[in-house]
Length: 65
Image (cartoon, rainbow, N blue to C red; front, side, top):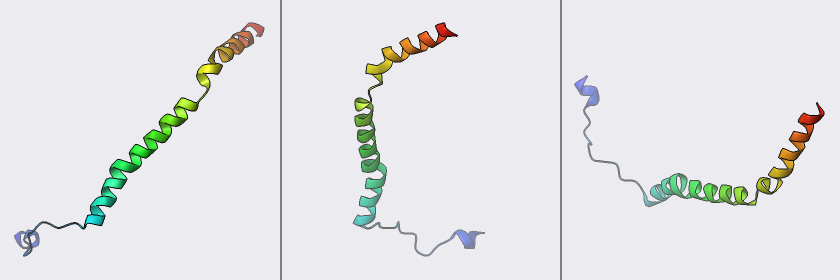
């Protein structure tokens, strides 16, 4: 088993600058951009304006039944 685990080259792998940039983009910038877009959609969603009317209509439907 020792023979399988032993390697001649034990130096750490060096990553290219473009690989590090790609990892940063995938794990930092893409989620940040998606979060910003989600927050914009949440802000523009008009439920808080329509909420009172929705509750009123639901109450009216309950009374009709």
